[in-house]
Image (cartoon, rainbow, N blue to C red; front, top):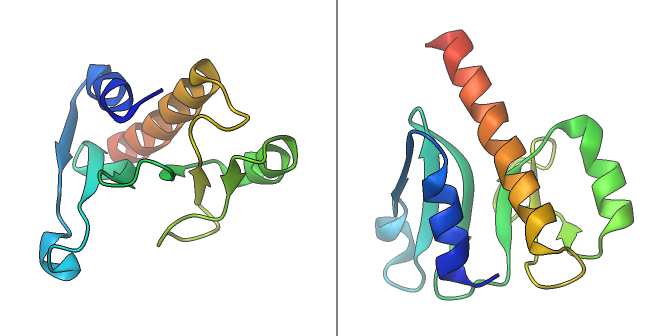
Length: 116
């Protein structure tokens, strides 16, 4: 999966928006693209280096994912209890990656509905 296919998939989910909210912090060194549902982020990555995607994850699934896939590891600048990183095009196929994104989206959407 390439960066555009990934972006298109994220934007195909209902009520998803995208933004680059960290521009002032990076001072032009990198651009982090963030996908939101209900105003809350569910995944993000560096658009200049599509080698690592940070995704929200159920804490109960993290250990198994990390044991099963070399592509799954510690998040980039995220709380390790709730986020994982995934290296696309490693040992995780596109459908499995889409499933992780969909689950991340659903986690955040459900939390937003409870508090919204």
